[in-house]
Length: 202
Image 1 (spheres, rainbow, N blue to C red):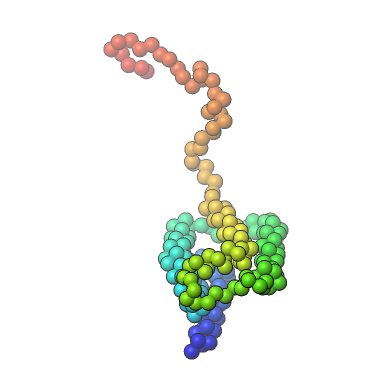
Image 2: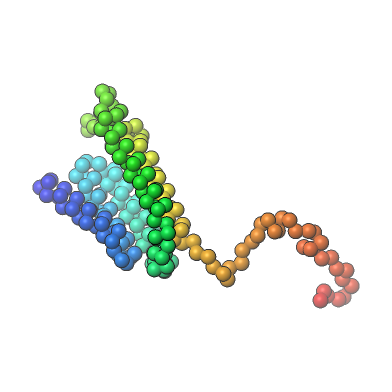
């Protein structure tokens, strides 16, 4: 039954990940993302990485994906206006995507022919020698450090994209001009009046 569950989880993960990109409704994209996380959790359980499975299920499905869902539903973003500038920003996006793809390719090449295959740096640890979390930390920050850094860059790009989506210029919002406030004169900012006893200030 192990190959059956593996191919089931893998096929659903690939299909749902494509639907995250191609779904027209952003709410549906978040739901497909949650489905992808659930199937990836099943794959981690089949591999014996129960720590990663629970981490993915609790943190990403229970917190991050639900947060994405509420943010998309509450902001009411006009995606049609955002798509108007896609052609103008396409060269920059293509450049960033090419750099990230090149880093991933070099990471996979380094994993296959580099440090990971040298004697004494085996990727697999015999079960029972140490706990799953410690073994994961050793492998993640040694043999897979380049992939870990690539994941950090991808998250950075995603964070910048979220800021761009939510940052909109509003005309009816009062904003401070710090330079103008610092450079103003005392005479322009303060007015001293002598008030007679029993009378107010007009």
